[in-house]
Length: 87
Ligand SMILES: [Zn+2]
Image (cartoon, rainbow, N blue to C red; front, top):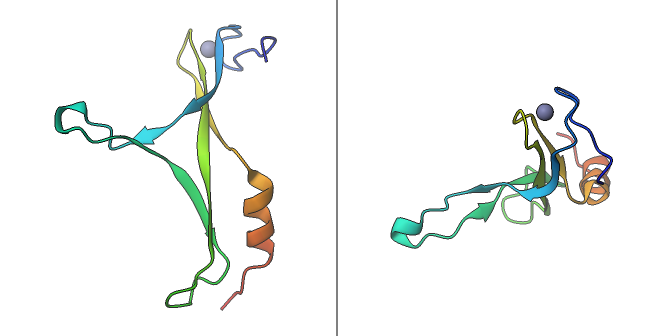
């Protein structure tokens, strides 16, 4: 991990596996929620859409701010994606 370099500026100040949150608002005591990517196995179903959600994690350069996102557990999403019922 420490050998990672920013692909924009070449800096080695790269922070990995950072949480990406929405809704964090200390003023009203609201706790943030991880941004997630979701895939639904059965999107047309009324109730049992069988949704798989995985949290996003960010990699951010501490020098220029270059940021990229990745999913924590992509294999689980892919599994659901390939089993999806198309309509
Ligand atoms: Zn950078």
